[in-house]
Length: 466
Ligand code: MN
Ligand code: MN
Image (cartoon, rainbow, N blue to C red):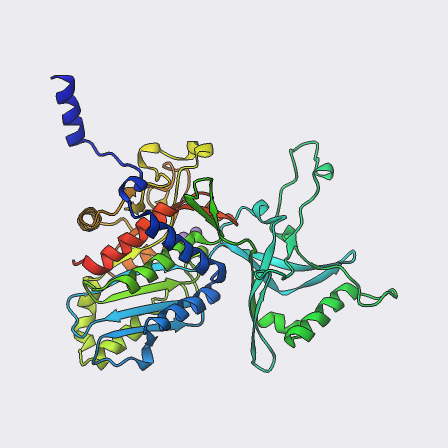
């Protein structure tokens, strides 16, 4: 065999994966899309604010609350579930054989305030916290934090809080110990535990005589004047600490975006835009944003409660379908993209990956056949037949994509919402962009991977049939 013959054979037989930038020649579209994503991320840092931003976009595009939709016509509607989850429906007049669903989650790792947060110690007012989701605690020290959420007062009025995100707002900080005094002779520095994540919220006493809690009472007075609340109201509240940083372009070449909460708001935004930008839909389509994925999808707004199904069932029965007869069949033929992020290889920490099956930054959306850990435990392991359909869809539509596994075997792992669709009998596969620094306060994504994800979701909505 000649060298030339060998090379031809090699090219024909082996798989190779290349940079998505080579395939994406719409550089302007990639940049415009990235800018609109960054705008969205500035406002939608928590599940509640993201739902609010999404509704604005949906209403601008003619979507209505599902209760107001006319079931006789093509339905473009949404359902807000307990202010923290959202389902978007695009249902044509005629229903064929199942739905196309894209599901992501809009909660991100963060730090929550405890029900009785405010304490004072040594003339500093602090808020006690309990972290939410998988964080590396040290990453949350010494960075500007914003407080976002809702407080329900004794009279039932709900007050929205959002401090630290606007220019001119104060921010909040969890302060670390200075290196000079962090020298345990037996260790490099002391271990950080959850009760050390105390947020600094004030330091000025209300009065100067020797009084108990003069700094704390001053903070409560300020909160009372601004929001009309008293300390007990903080018990019926959800107050989340999120990084106060803005999303920014990253690198001299501006090829990446650094932001808080790409996991998994990036898939929410890409799927929302994909739905709005799809001129035609291949099948009835539902885009769902869940809460609570980062703590195992428990809770009524998490994916263990498939809140989007009852409104759909009701809609179909209003259309005159006998849902008792047809719904199970429709569900069996439903295809779901569990749209969640994956881990890109960080060149500084390559040892946790098996490079033949690791996702590379900038190589397109990652198709993950299975997640789980320690022998695929807890995974939805997508069928070969379904993977083939997705592979063909992406190739036919020239979407840059790659495969990826979350780290070496037995090194770690993770789960997504996929299995909560699988257990209902739907076809489901994981698909989303790969990040650097996932779950950190400032995650990194390639613009090419963001755009590839959008293209993939658009191809799925416009063309996918079982
Ligand atoms: Mn995620
Ligand atoms: Mn996550």
